Image (tube, rainbow, N blue to C red; front, side, top):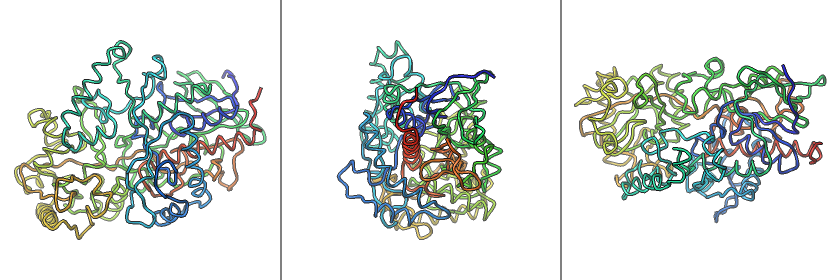
Length: 571
């Protein structure tokens, strides 16, 4: 095994947590290397919605306060939560956001309601997003090398869309055809970029956040090493982490770290062995909606070899997903998120007994938690069924099944019917096709039709709060999330308990230091992002509840390393 070079700080993983740790450390005079096992950088963050939950950020006109934030978090978190770590997040997140903005990353306040809008202290202005970023600002040699958005986030699998455009098309809002035409026309009018790459130069959502952040990262002099996988952590005789052992196409080498190693390599959702070990209902790796086979828990495994403790490993950042064959490659499959589809009017979700188990329009993580709880209770969930009628089919997507305007019936591949998508002329016939008790499904649909008339769901309160309504259909009354399921044909698609990553991993403290099984910090080792335990326990408080803490604890880790090193560049 060959010995490599040495840096002040080595960061494992190139997503939001790693990028922030690297940027902050470099701008404080430390030499930094980011190690990324994929051939593209940006991590899962670049493929995400790119939202950061930053309470009390002070960037808008609201009157949020630390006290209000803590009131909200106290009302929504449950189970074991480290109060010092939670407080560190609340106190440092606004500082991180201001630092990011000062570094040149434009931040916009989004009116996204907190995921528990009826709880004390909830607000609708804590989520920050980035505007569209011109990817070619990274340089024509780099811009195609940032990890790309999934096909599901692009129009016709090619054209980048921001969140406003995505929701306009998703909801078929007034003028949505014009929006689609503008998205397509903008791409083809960009003739100079077409000579460089077929990739849209418009980086949107997570790619916008990561593109703007990496412009600052490269400007700060951070080095990036792709196609390089963490194998082990290097430890000195006294127990201090002093570097990493990595591999590149089978060749191994060591890279020294004078002042610290920051683990920011994502969670373990693509490691079935770890899912089986930690999750209450393990599910399958292929149901995850994060990049395929990317996050396999290498950082967690390496840290556990040194005696690191774990925390909050029992659940993922859940999101409902469904599976469809890839276009023109039917032997391969794609995972499609159905986060908002399940709460639209003219639909209902049932377990395999034909019974509802949740407010379908609730936050996607809460939907997944309900799937897990119902599976433990009934043994008839994971997957469940999304049942809808022709009105829903005409207007909304059902996971990867696009509305009629995009995918009319005659364009649905023949092998999808009764394998991935089920259709029948009556509810009774549909129940028979999907092996759900006929009378139970008939009664559930009848109940939903009654709720649609009154606008009140007495079972689960669907459409009864501003979060539900935010993703409902404003043209439907009296409740934008409820509509009668009464126009044939009727459809059903299986919904799996997918995820955006894992909620827990390596145990860390308020300074992002890795903690061993005896409760003591492992000197020189830090962790941030989904490879570490999140500050909220099993809770997902609002949009961006993954990326916000990831960047904040990357920021905290870099500050601690810089303080220990004397804030000087090592020679």
